[in-house]
Image 1 (cartoon, rainbow, N blue to C red):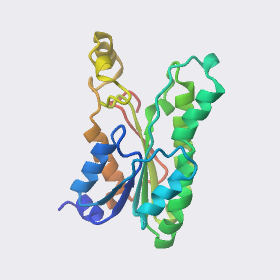
Image 2: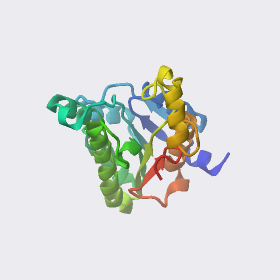
Image 3: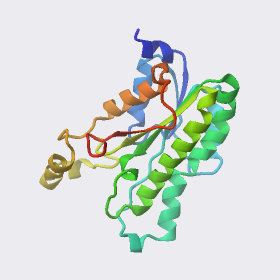
Image 4: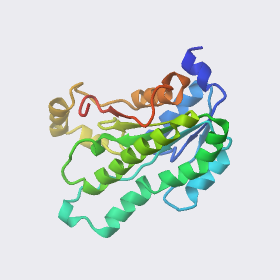
Length: 228
């Protein structure tokens, strides 16, 4: 078994909103490394849901913050208060609630890994995505601040900023088949293709392992070179 496999074997890993986006691949990959996977399917926008998810998974070694919401394509002057609040309710509000529940136990044990699955839209301007990009940006800022704060407790909090991941949640199959989209890939993404969910899962595994103890509050773009 590899060092990564050894460090994850028997660890309790909570993966939130596990049936959406790349949740199933994350669950499968962690299970392949002999982790004990707690696949939580609930919508975490409800105020009490994040704490309930953590309590059901305790004692918790690894928290994978995997939150999903549609990315509205709205001009900035047309973003309503309802849209803004909804996007933040799904992508931002659950995170401090999850950490309030998870961090005390990790601090007490002086061990823990938290990986946030975020978006590279927080790192590069995109038209008509102000609410979504702002929410993803809040995830980045929160990760950086908390990661620095809890590193002294041997807790590592980092974020993977993805884009152009081959998943119908954000890039429907009918869109991917369009010639205009294929040309966009060639023009904007240096690797010339979509990033696979398996590639995202593999990097998540690495950050959740003891091999990644040198990182704290860091943001890693994983978008085929669209953002570096």
